[in-house]
Length: 324
Image 1 (cartoon, one colour):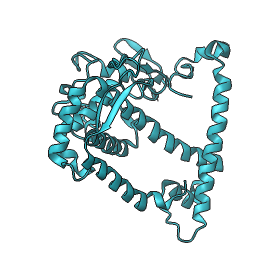
Image 2 (tube, helix red, strand yellow):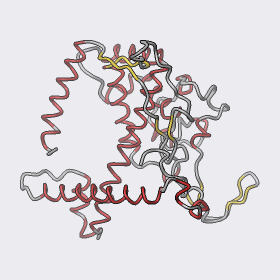
Image 3 (tube, helix red, strand yellow):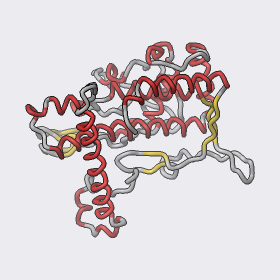
Image 4 (cartoon, helix red, strand yellow):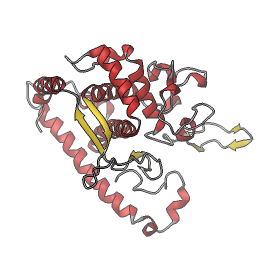
């Protein structure tokens, strides 16, 4: 089920009392999706177990660590394969959604892309694509990624926290045990902190290109970059990996491709990008862009050759170790 496909029954439990037909029979659809997810996750765990039977297999994955320790952990098969699936989905869905939001923004703010390309070209050149070690020398690219995370927060209400004791906030009583949601969208679009919040403006992150884990630990909220990874003890445990993946993916896209708005095949006219959060995006637990027209082209033949060469190396070093 895609973004916005399920009603917000977890946010507003009273909606559980409404007949599901008012929500497009969402319970039936959720059950079907859940059944398919279980089959997929079970297959992933079975595949890992099958590989472990090979004496030459290198046990270096997260699930290998879980299986090696399961005598102590005592997890059931269901718990293990669900854990395996959640790891894959939690890392892939959010990262892919953030990358799509970046591409969507570049179809409208092409000037930002050109400046980012200038920085990447100055640091990297054409002989290779960006690597993580280039991060500190690419503050403009770093700010571009942070702005993409702010502009269209992947999880606009984050994940719920629970009040551990009674509390009062600005005259409102918060009973112990209450579910507390962080209004990430509101924080990211507060004009008191981000002028013209609907604009993709890198000035929002001038001087704030430090890594998210560092800025997430500051006590002064004015120094915080964004809340895309949540906050507090329930902050995203994978943000270190996610931030590196986003940098590598987006920096390589900037290095490799020109990106622009789509062209209408019949008229030959430019299709105006719909970046409106209400009409151009689907809202649910995850906020994702609706399908949009986009034009992408490799920037040069030299870069095309590098892409092919680097893919062949990854194919030999990584992909060849797995069966597809």
